[in-house]
Length: 180
View 1 (cartoon, rainbow, N blue to C red):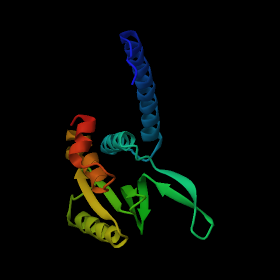
View 2: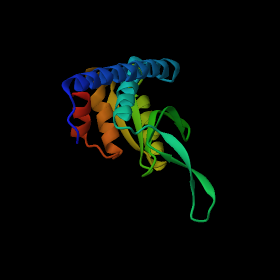
View 3: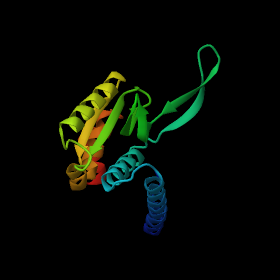
């Protein structure tokens, strides 16, 4: 390996700052756009979605598709990364968020329960339990978080969800990525 003079190392540092600022501005713009134009209507949904999108970006787990050849020689569309969808329809219900690890097929539903809409009375509790059972019958694990959990630490919920989907990072590694 060649020795690199200090002035070149300094310039490489400046280049890294430029790239970092460019990436920061793009991520900020894209996340603001996705959160503001998507289905995240409440502050707890917006916080959770922002935290989850951050982890997806840091782990390079973005959902994408590509074409591949099968053993028989035909072409099929293949997917990789984490599929992350707000207001995903499952049976007759809509999940706040659906997450799926495309390689393993593992599926997770995330429900964010603000106090004004959930568990206020026996009828609502029965509805939520029936909803959870329906989603479980469709192969989903269901994680529920209260609004106060999300307000307190949006990354904690996102970390638990992403780590559960086993994309190659455990909770401690994900916490370290976001400084939590």
